[in-house]
Image (cartoon, rainbow, N blue to C red):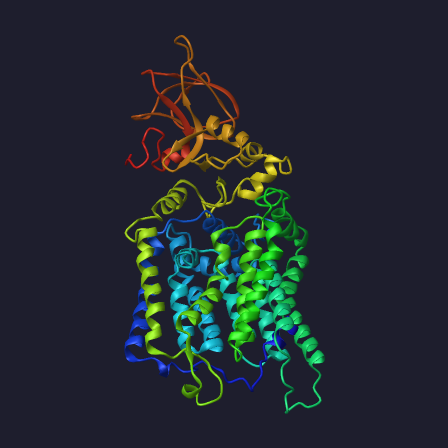
Length: 587
């Protein structure tokens, strides 16, 4: 990294590029346009926090952050397959908001400063390469691009990850490359690694970009202020300081978990759990064969950039190689490619795109010097980035209606589970949709867990765990549960609203005998029909109210009526829920 960073020091004798470093080059109309687009972008964040549907990763992240507020230790006490820094930083805010159904929306709003930080990093990069005008347009185009806008809206670790990465690159490209600068950039990269282990892919891209620029860029002129300086020694010092900065936060986290005896748990969940041979494109695609050819083409294009922009060409080529390598590695080598993985890519791409759209060739006379070069201050050049930004603005509501109520279902889930349960009750969900309740089964049922279950690497002990913890509430939707758990939920729970609770619908066998049924979970049960509490004989004794029942066979003889009846976890009935009320009806 230090080698590539040193190569960014371009010759002071190449004045062929004229980036503006002040916003004063903006005419009032362009300045107003940028302000209006920025205001529209930020203004859309609030309604879309309610309109855009939740991703299943959001409650999973939030459940882990809530666990920190309860004194539970990530990995040891609560499963998570992400690095821990995002959840540790989120926990105080989750504790402040408390147990409210609006918690996911509130945490989405808390992502706005991170969204703004990423755009600030994009602006800094654009300013350092091509001037403040390019930086401003880059931030606007990035913020309005649909994938970046919607995935950056969600409460997820990737939002913090992208902000830290872009700021790190902005620091490294922001001026004279010296050990202090590379150490600060390394600190930010280390924070990235503490937020997401996908940073390993970004580090490989950084190494490719650095090595590529070092190989292609002309040797920088010797600094007259340091006549005895050794370029090799300077590069080694920059590399060492960068590596030292990168190590700080990850090492602190390793020591923190090791001191609590949870380092093996961290390695198992955050590292080993995510590495399953044959998942995604591993073993199922030949894309990896394209990696080297595409990287070679990127190097050819980077060489052209160096020749076309002799002044700032090294930095532009570095950014081009970095952005291109990130995308290529993600598309050809990374096993599971998701849209949120592109969050660190867009801010780099839009810097290059804005620079390309605003570039104008200048003749020697216009520059007041020999040769010809490029300028990013021509007023009419703003028409192209403006058209792109307006197009993005129009596409957003077309992709996801701003008047939708996409968060309503998840808010209802949380509201109902808070009404159904107390703080000590266990709730079975897929990945933490209940948010504020402990799960009986350790693993979140996400892609890698289900893949490991299918291969027999993780045992489906969900039924046993539900019985052992007396879990009386489970998610109503069965999609995503492994087959054995799905059968257990169908047979031993009844749907009440958005959740299932322990119980059975009672069906009479042949003849006019009693209603016989089996229970799997020890709990206090009530017997009801569509009108309310039922009366009769339960297990040979008069039934006059909810009763503690053990697992096994039971029999109920109603005093009147032929049903249907239901035996239901009594706490649900006492709190106004019924299996005879359809979803959305008021009991």
